Structures are given as structure tokens and as C-alpha cells.
Length: 219
Image (cartoon, rainbow, N blue to C red; front, top):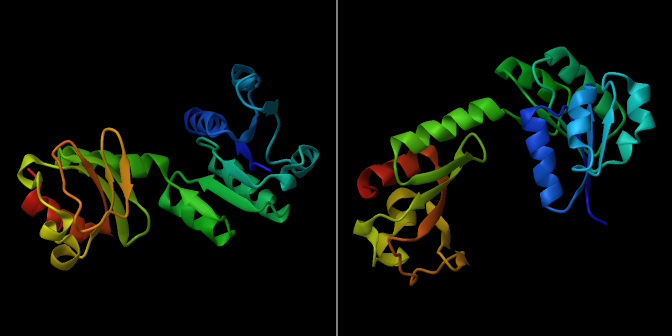
């Protein structure tokens, strides 16, 4: 059976996430306290309902405990976000993901046992800053406090080099885990793979390793 998701809070972040999950082929229940917001997503999501997520009986009536993952995407009401997350853990939802507005908000959610905490505004700010600092940086995703995955377009000066010649692992400690080309993607490329200036390298390493590589090789 395909996974079932519930998204609580259908503002910009929540509705975007819910729509993308639908596009990926999953069943999605959308929950919001605004009738107008719910009406906009009726017919787009698997189901959209008006409910107070801080009411445990309302959550039980929706069968929230049966969902594989529930995302708390409540906007600016930190109290409701915390109370909703607490009730979801009490109802033994398998996986609870919550949007945090501040570091303190995130710490509280973490103490409550929320499985994953996301900081959309902070993370987007970090990604945009890195993209502005390096024109060849297409995307930048922190996967932990130590490791980052970065997408870098191959500059002309590296075109024609093999990964063995580039020798990223030995020189910088980071690794090319994929090469995106116009018509194909090479996962776990070999040392003999040749880079072209139309390629995109997907690199994993810690922040400093990737910065050091960018400074020396990226135009």
C-alpha cells in the first residue's frame, strides 16, 4: 500500500508540500481551521477538512493515528504547533514532522520527540546565500550539521577531466556521488567518467570541504 500523509496547516508551506506529495502519487489529507483555505484545496488533495488540530477528539475522529506521516505546517501560531505535535505523539502517529519558526520552537519540538523538524525560512535563506556567493552552485542542502550535498555546474576549466584526475576525495575529502547530464544521470560514477561543461556534479562533503573545492576550481 502507498503511504498516507496528513498535512496540518495549509498555508503557503503546507499547501505546497501537500500538492507535491499528491504529484508524487501519495494520498494526502489536508487539515486547516480556515474554511476558505480548505475549499481551495478540495478536489486537489485526496481529502481536505476543517478541523481544530489542538482538539484530540477531532484528531481521533479523522483517524490521524492511522497515517504513516503527519506534517505539522502551522503558520505563526507556535502554541498551536506545539500542542498539535504533542497530541500527535500521544496518539502514537508513526512519524511526526513539524515546521519550526525559531530555534527555540525547534528545541521544544525536539524535546517532545518530534521525529523531524524543518526550518523552511532559515534553510531557504542559507541556500540562497550560497547560490549568490557561487554562480556555479545550483543547489545546496544541509543533510546534517556536518554534511552537505551540493549541486555544482561543471566550469569550462574542468571540462574533459576524469574524476580520477580531479581526485576530489584525496584532495578535499568530498565525493562526487552523481553526474547529471542533459539526457542521463550517472549514480556513483567511476574514476574514468569524464566531466563536460554542460554537466552538473552532485557532491557530498562537509561545508568547509565544499567551500575549499569551490574556491580553487569553480569559476
